[in-house]
Image (cartoon, rainbow, N blue to C red; front, side, top):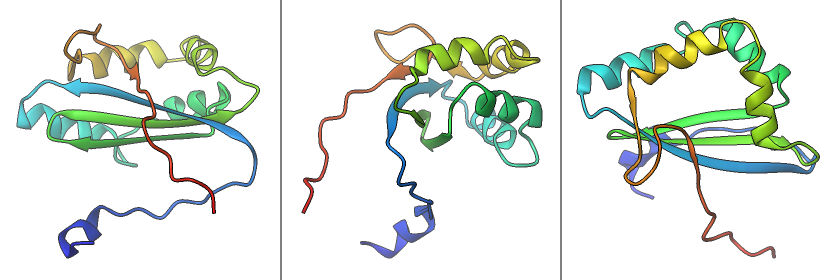
Length: 130
């Protein structure tokens, strides 16, 4: 691996519980200042605790968002018996979730050919087990 990629590696804790992993994509408006502001909101000191509490309470165990240029990539993990769409709907009923969603909408735009919302991605490769 090239050295310049080292700064973009992340340590994760892998659970041994069967979960579903769902990957989603969305674009940000292609404006460097808006992208910086979006990232500030997603730093530990910028994210509202009530939002992360609602995400967990809805059943989502893992939510990571990655960025390159103006493209966002989200990884969610939920217990295998849960449905992400149901978790998402449930999350929307908790305090200030709508407010957060409206705030984030000012930074976001639709992927080409889609509505302006997170779009589930298709997995096209997984490394075979040993």
